Length: 87
Image (cartoon, rainbow, N blue to C red; front, side, top):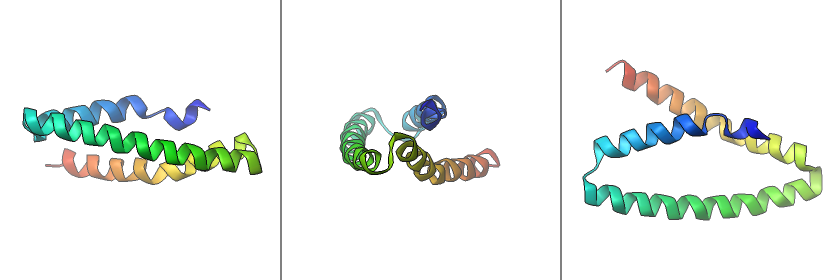
């Protein structure tokens, strides 16, 4: 169950660093609020969908599905980090 959140800490640190670097204080506060709201909304919708999958196919398969769905974001972050490191 914890395998879906292995990279959560690293992602949060990277996100925080980018927010500090790229935005002014006013922009950071506004974008942080919007980001938090939309993230909570997306999680709520996905949690309902994941619950429906768990009811139909079992919790293990639903969590495996959630992990597989999260892999593209890991790969995108990896590619972006490699490109940024080369600069």
